[in-house]
Image 1 (spheres, rainbow, N blue to C red):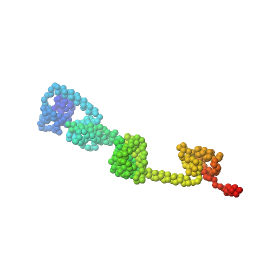
Image 2: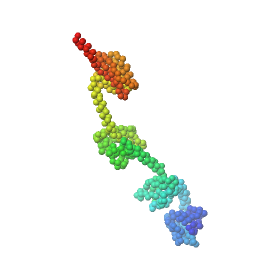
Image 3: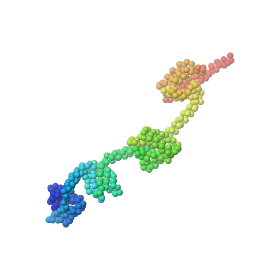
Image 4: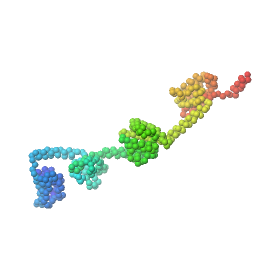
Length: 460
């Protein structure tokens, strides 16, 4: 090879094969050294002006000599000739090498090899495409990684600035230790990064929405790790924010609730853990609801239900006020019933649909029945039938049924009836709120005329 002014001007056929070029190719000194350095190691950066030589890295019998000559540089390669068998094998390997080069150049994923000093010594076409992306002025090559020297395989994520889209192109890089250094394989994970970002944004949106929800929320993923909670959970349970932010598992979450007396105290720990597993199973399969009466006097409603992708969501609601109000209403109802039971008048209350909702003690004594003991719904039709059988004939029963079942505006009315035993009663129908009706049976009091008649009869 003859080089003048840094340009290859003369080369033999074997030199062209060595440089992998054609006779008309214009190669400069950099092109020459790039082709020869993998064989002979480091060569001078510029065309040398003094004689020198370099031995092949893997063959000391092959020597590259160069010496200045007539304002140029003559380069000569000498070595021992190879045998016929070795030559044939080299031709076969050459075909396989060409195939591997084609495969590597067509590979859609970046592949490159770095030296032990982490310099890129080989790469495929996909890696060259990554190099074309904007690096924002960085001098280091794209996806520059320094794997852990204590490992033979290393996986990490790296990004490259995309000049065309103005975004980051993300890759997952697997690095394997090889005798030459490190071999790296990169795979695009833009869709995965986008999905993760979408999921994070979705969780942040849910967190902002649930931040104002008075009901405490705790969502566990399929691995039973806490992935989402709202501030109400901190307020209702008193759990530390650091503990919840650490993504505890589901059993640890309930363990801490138990330690802080924020759930009913079990009789023994073993049965409680077994019950907790049943609770998790029930919540995973269908809606599960349980009421917790805490030692502090508070009452919580705990609801568990399945969450997408095998997760579980638990909701905790403070229903202490509701329970207290219900108890107060129940107490007031019991007091009202007790007061009505003390009255002498027989009283029965019917709903708008005609079902009997209440009767007092005097009613049960008068008509010798207890409608609430009948498993079949007892209404105005059955009641008027019983009253009609127990009394003298009277036309009021049909009117009374119509009065109870009508949807129009109503006014109180009364009528006198006489039981089969001869006891006169005043039957009074009075409309109540919500379309209900109260039917009251009162004993008839003697009028002054009745008193005078009884006195005459006694004198006679």
